[in-house]
Image (cartoon, one colour):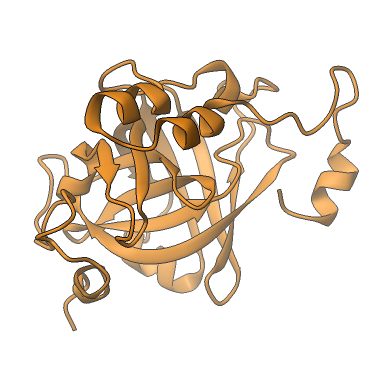
Length: 217
């Protein structure tokens, strides 16, 4: 089975500007991208290159630099490597219709002896990111079926800073979601709503690490 068959099945390439389902490696063979996606709801798509495609997870609240925070990450269909350049509008009525931003990208290294495909098959992928915003050691751990957790390891890049709030713009163009929607004919009001940071707790009233461990964010 072609790893991009599901990607192809879900899209009409005469209607969406998304790249075609062509499996090919990047120059490094280990690229990554995080895309901020304002569709039916705001989420962040974390994509790591493996065997010429981008293995992909939808992370509803985005990456956290705090090692105490476990972010829910739902495995989704593989994407072509060219998707790492995609920033723009998926038309309403198409799969994933909404505004897409390249929030971060770069390269990564696998930690440990396994290649990415083998580590994913085992259900635990440890990796080091070299991005514009995200860096250092991370892990993706499968809990059941398509459900995974994205967790930052403790290192010099770990922080309490909510990076999705402090660094909200595109690494490609410096635009916010509303700017992309305005420039490219998308739903500006919806994109503006997605640009607004969500506040999970008032300043000084952050959830404790104990409460975070009970339930993934």
